[in-house]
Length: 309
Ligand code: PMP
Image 1 (cartoon, rainbow, N blue to C red):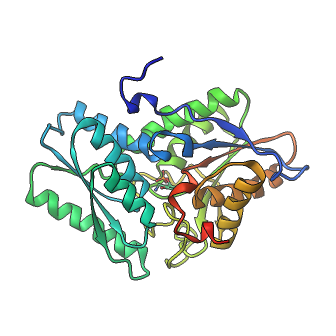
Image 2 (tube, rainbow, N blue to C red):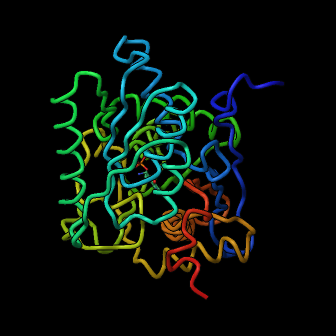
């Protein structure tokens, strides 16, 4: 099959059973490896869906400028979609995100505006959003997808990623867990998995230093892409029955183990998700099936402690 453009190659990432990392008496763990997706992360899906919807609604024109405040992968995804569709793209991001992410955005031909993160990531993301709002107010050509509010974000996780998991697993799924950035992943995939198994146990996963759903305070942490310090509008807070807190060390160690014991090169929040999935698999026990997401590839973390010797 010939793809007419790179966007047609999106999705249908593999669902992979973990082997050496899973204790004998635990449920099996299946991971959906989005590091193999177009653009190297799950967020190309949401970027494409938000742009496709805006095009259908007549909100985008050939001279439109896509502007989005984002902590990383959504920016890379939008830069990629902007390149294919021919839109100028400007990404506003905290200066605390890994250098690789900025370089990737620029490599796709988009512009990066950096905002200083003084240790309060929630405040920094709010500043990024305020800059995007101002640009939109000043220039009618500016389109801001607003991933934290846009229903096209959870919709593609529900109808795309979630359905891919149902079809690939082809058996009941008893547990699902995911970290929360915009909440699109846990909301969309969670809603689909719950539709197919209403008794499923779903865990929201939070970084220890940004456990906002658990009433904690916001500090800096290394689990980039989740724990942004806000409760997003699109997050379905009724979709999870439990919250699991994972610290940076556990997230990084688990991501390193995924490479060393399973041969899977994924990012830090993938380690967060799998650390929680192991706890969930132990709780549910042998004979049950737990699914989680590996949102991106390790190759955008060379400059972070993930690659410390
Ligand atoms: N992990 C990484 C690396 C991400 O970039 C994101 C997106 N912010 C997430 C997890 C969380 O995904 P979502 O926005 O769907 O909650």
